[in-house]
Image (cartoon, rainbow, N blue to C red; front, side):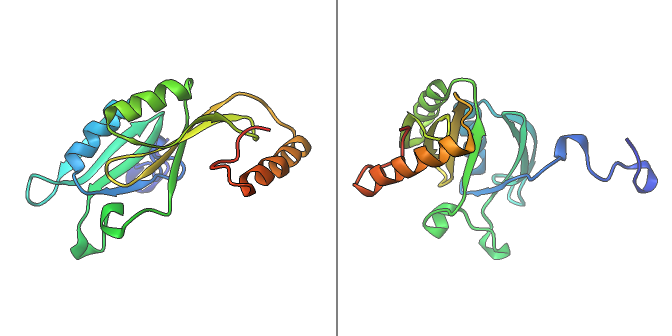
Length: 170
């Protein structure tokens, strides 16, 4: 579909939706980690000015595009390692959350929350990658009505308030 100026498509087909742009310390290593941990497909890589860092890379993870670049503090781009953490969790659905969790940990991710059946109907877990980003992995197991989800949420949050580390299925 070429409906833009000069016959150029204004939104490329593979660039639909929101695209996370990860800033990392160690871009080359991050690309290799994402390949091992999540089966990422490298679409393109552009080196930084020193030819050792990543100026821009494009990966596909579970069919979604992810941009990646090495941190560049001079331009205001800092990684979670430089900031002391992240306020963002990147989530994606997989066929077998337990297998992908094990694969990610084997590749060097840190387990933040082991896989568990959650009240909203997903089997869910979290890992932190070596570059400071947090990933939530999900497998949908059960369709839950809004009323049932509300009941389960209240029960799960009550358990959570008693000191459980995560709200699991109830």
